[in-house]
Length: 165
Image 1 (cartoon, rainbow, N blue to C red):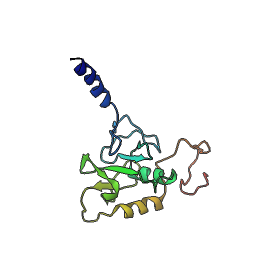
Image 2: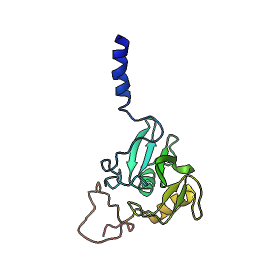
Image 3: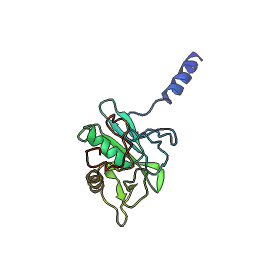
């Protein structure tokens, strides 16, 4: 009986932690994007990145923000890197991003426009094609980075110019 009483709290406590690999849980309408700090609200496009030896989990509202974060933080060649995206047709199904196919022209939270699919479809592209397009485009104008103390929000400007003016 004592073993059962000890085992029950341990099982309950174990359920409070995220797994060490694979996708975690996004609490939609509560969790925020690591880059833009907007609330993650659309289950079709929320993205998760696991990185480093501790398998830290970072969440994003759009695959584009996740890809820029991976590049900017030096995780591109991280052997422990995992990127998880939902199948836009079945948002409760997580896909390893580098194995997924992407359909452009979607209305996504940060306007990168790509939705992930588990199988190829007419017009879909590979991860590398999608990644190249996202990085070439730069950070979307919908994604001001609030952590930049030099960023002036009182004027119109092109986020891709690098001048801040």
